Image (cartoon, rainbow, N blue to C red):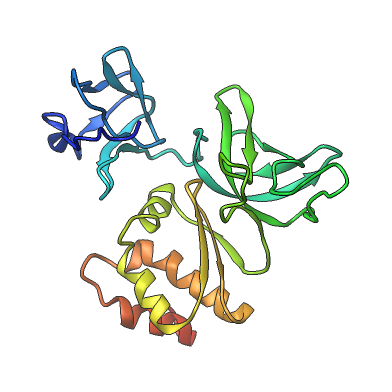
Length: 248
């Protein structure tokens, strides 16, 4: 839910950060006025409260959204999530897409800007796509789309070339923060690159050459474990791009 226009934060919201929650726990009572900002991961409104839908630690983005940082190994789709998927099959009316969840996702052929029955996307098995989860249910295949609410691509679609790597869902969410981790700015200072980050723990990155894309991806992937707070992101990236390894 978007935050209220008054921007008021419910009493006790800040104290929730770092608290461990289990499925069904009431994380926060809804205030009588205004709204509470919650992310798509692990929280939902129920009656007069915000309730946890999975186990984990309560976190808050720099924008003020509350969410649950879980420890599950597999991504659980939620409506509205942006994901990086890999096409595993092309059917007559849809693509089957691996989004690292419990079920493969369905991406309709017509869920692309300007797509028609005669003008279908030139996407095939093994291709990567950046999409939005349009429908998600625990017992059904999630449905994806590559358009926004106005039917426009808005950066969704076929991810051509580049290199895709996997990371934790928590690190993917961190890469989407504003400002992002220091390693992102340090990488941009060394080489021009494009990046699409999926909340499903997949990141696509493209650079002027395939070798640079692979090394840039390696730097971002390694930074999750090897570059601690206050570390020298610039030196870390330089080592990675030079091919000497990120550590050291």
